[in-house]
Image (cartoon, rainbow, N blue to C red; front, side):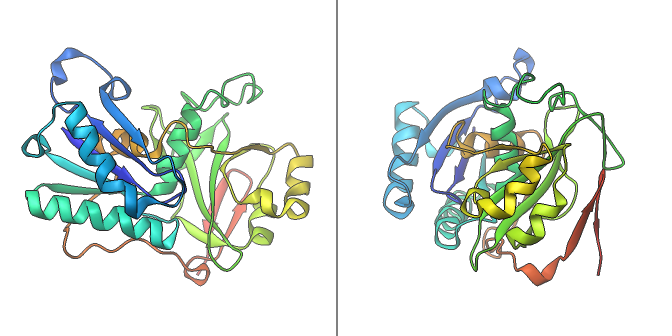
Length: 267
């Protein structure tokens, strides 16, 4: 049984993923055994441990049955992400279990593309599911940019595509950029998920006029379920619990330019 946590955004959550019974033919989406959301935004420190405990009790799962702990490791809220990461590290270390860290922006990408709002009609035939990823190029499908509010009036940005197996694949490393830097990167083949862009409507008005589609994320499906699914499918990174630190990004680490169908990073 895999236990997943994510507290990188106001929508904190916990999920259980059933790793047993691989022979039953169920897909990983159907193996999400249970999910709990932290109803009071930014109360993760008060609610997270109790939510995980109650979720285990309600599903009659003992701590000894947990084989893997997965966590959204950022980028995201500085304090919020630390709470989830520290809880996951403590669990993995104390139980002597594997710790898998998943990009919170990758989880956001998966959750948003699974949302009912991102269906074929809304995308004008720029289908996300089934898009082919070949050498970091999307063939006839939308590029996905996941945004989340960062410090210093910046945005955390993740540039993704959906691979044939339905999982998000990073086109580049997650970065932190100013809204004025992000907006010109977006073209009519881009789908933007997440939030933060609505705080600077004047800056993002030109991309909207160019046909860029913006879909806010309102907490459903919960990010912990996406973290669990990505980790169960072999995504994320297995880390040493005692040494891992949350992933905080700084703008000057990765200046980048998004051109046509490719994102190029220049030193």
